[in-house]
Image (tube, rainbow, N blue to C red):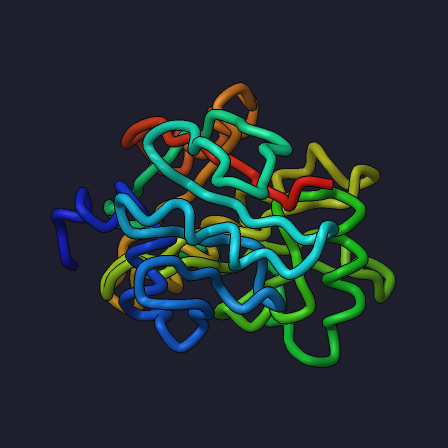
Amino acid sequence: MVQGFDTVLDRPVWSALNGPQAALAQGGSTAMRIDPGYGPFAAAAPGHERELAALLRDVDDEIWLVEDGAVMPPPGTAVRKTARLAQMLATGPVAADDGFACVPLGQADVSAMAELALATRPGPWGPSTWRYGPFYGVRRNGCLIAMAGERMRPADGIIEVSGVCTDPAFRGQGLAGRLIRHVMAGHRARGCASFLHSYADNAAAIALYRSLGFALRRERVVTILGKVR
C-alpha cells in the first residue's frame, strides 16, 4: 500500500482534480471545480484565488474550498460559511464483517439515496454523487435506511470515505460503523488507504472513526463561497 500522502492530502480537492479525477474538472488550469453534478468542491493554484469567482454559475450556486485555513472571498463573492474539519487517515488492515447484510447501490437506487442524503445531510449531495465510486446500503422493509460510499481520490492509493448517513429512526444500531468498515475493506482490496473529513466539533463521529482505525492527520477549514447577492 502506498504511504506518504501528506502532499496530496494538504489540498485534497486540488490534488484530485489534477490527478485521478481530472476528467471531472471544470474551469481552467489555475482554478477549477468538480462537475457540479458531483458536488460543489473547487480549488485554485496559489495566487489565483481571484479566478474562483468565475466558477460560480449564479447567485444560488456555491463552491466549497478545503484548505489549511479560511479563504478570503475574491471580488464578487461572499463567504456563506466556514467550519473546521478534522481530516482523518486510516492505513491499517480492516477485518471483514462477513455477517453484515449490506447491498451495493446503483442507478435503481438514485432517488432513495438522494432522499436519505438530503434528509440527513452527511455532506453535499448532487445528482451524480453516487457515481464517485461504490456505495453500499442497508434496507429494511424495502426502504434504504443507511448508506456509505466514497468521494475524492487525491492520488492513486488513497480514497475518501463519504456519504455516511443513517435514517434517524434506525440510529444506535451500529449501521454507520459497519458500513464504513465495509467501504474500507473494499479500499484495502484495491490496495488503497482510506481518509475522511468530519466537522471538528462532532465528537461522537470522531470517536466512531477512531474506533474504526482512523487517526487525526490535521485540521482543515472548509470555506463556502457564493456570488454576492
